Length: 376
Ligand SMILES: Cc1cc2nc3c(=O)[nH]c(=O)nc-3n(C[C@H](O)[C@H](O)[C@H](O)COP(=O)(O)OP(=O)(O)OC[C@H]3O[C@@H](n4cnc5c(N)ncnc54)[C@H](O)[C@@H]3O)c2cc1C
Image 1 (cartoon, rainbow, N blue to C red):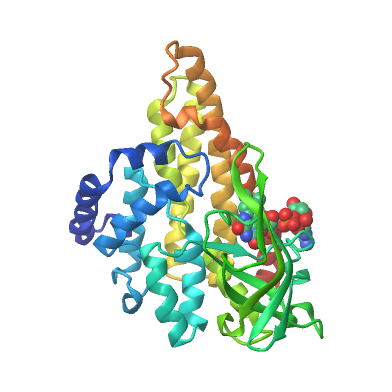
Image 2 (image 1 turned 180 degrees about the vertical axis):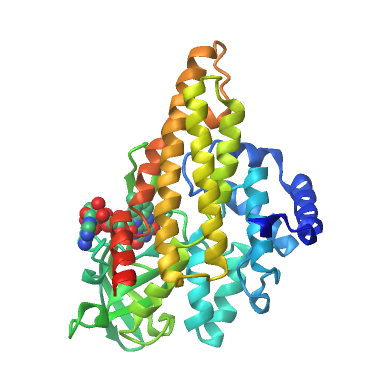
C-alpha cells in the first residue's frame, strides 16, 4: 500500500486532481452520481470521454504507441482512484477495455489503424455479442452460424443480454464457423457493423426496470471475412484473452469512493457505522490484492482476474445492502425529501448490482476456474 503514498508520485497526483477539478463539468458529475448502473448511458459517458481524449488520458492502460499516456502501473491506479474520488462518469468498457486489447494483439495493421483511433475518440461505440439463449456459462455451446459465401460470412441466429446494443454502432461477436471436433475449435471472432441489413434489436428490461441490455437477432446478415479477428475457428483464444480484461481490473478505488460518500452521509447509528467500517477494511485488503495483481506477484493474470471479479462484485453487493439500510434511516429523518444522491439511488443500484455476480462469467464459474488453476 506504501506504493500509493510514494512522495515521488505526489506531483502526478496533484496534476490529475487539478485537471479533474478544472475539466469535469458539474452536470456530468451530477449525472454520474445519480447513475443506477456501472454502465453509464453514452449521453453521460461520451462527453467525458471526449474531454479525456482531448487531454490524451482516455486510455490509461493502452501502450503509448496506440495512444495511451505512457503511465506506469501505479500512476494508472492513482488516476483511477482520483477519478473515482472526483465522481467522474464511467466510460463504456466494451471498446476501450475489452475489444481494443485484442485488436492490438490479434488485429492486422489495417484493423488496428482503422478501429483503435475510433475507439479512443468514441466515434465507435461497441457492444459484446458472446452470450446466446442456450450459451451463457457454457459459452462454447454457442450456435450463431457464420457460413462462408464469397468474401463474406452469412450470419443467422441470435445474441442475448447484449449490453448497450441499442446505442452501439459496432459489435464484437463469437460465431460458429465449424461443427467439427470440440465446440471451442469451431468458433471465430468477428467485428461487425450494427447498421448491417438483417440485424434487429429487441430490448430486455432489467429487474430495476432499466433498458440496459437486449436480444439481437441476425437474419442473413452479411459480414466481410476481412472483419474476422484472428484465424477462422481460432476465436476461442481471442475470447479467452478478452475475458481477462473484462474480469480483471480495479474495483477497490470506485468502491472506496462510494463508501466514503456513504459514511459521510450516513446516520449516527453505531451498528451501521461499524458495518461500514468493516467494509472499509475489506476494501483495503482488496486494494492490496489489486496492487499485487498489477505487479503479477504470486499468480497468473487469469487467476487474479477471477479472484478480483468475485471479491469486487461481492463487496459492491454488500455496500448496496448497507446503502439501502442507510437510505432507510435517511428517508425517516429526511422530512423535505432532499436525500443525497448516494442514498436516493440506493435501491435501484442494489437491484442493478444483483447482476454483477452474473455478468462477465458468474461468480460460481470464477470459483470453478480458480479451483482448476490452483489444483491443476
Ligand atoms: C446485466 C448483464 C449484462 C450482460 N451483458 C452481456 C453482454 O453485453 N454481452 C454478452 O455476451 N453477455 C452479457 N451478459 C450475459 C452473461 O455473460 C451471462 O448471463 C453469464 O455468463 C451467465 O450465463 P447465463 O445467464 O446463461 O446463466 P447460466 O449459464 O444458465 O447459469 C445459471 C446459474 O447456474 C450456475 N452455473 C452454470 N454452470 C455452472 C457450473 N459449471 N458450475 C457451477 N455453477 C454453474 C451459474 O453460476 C448461474 O448461477 C450479461 C448478463 C447480465 C446479467
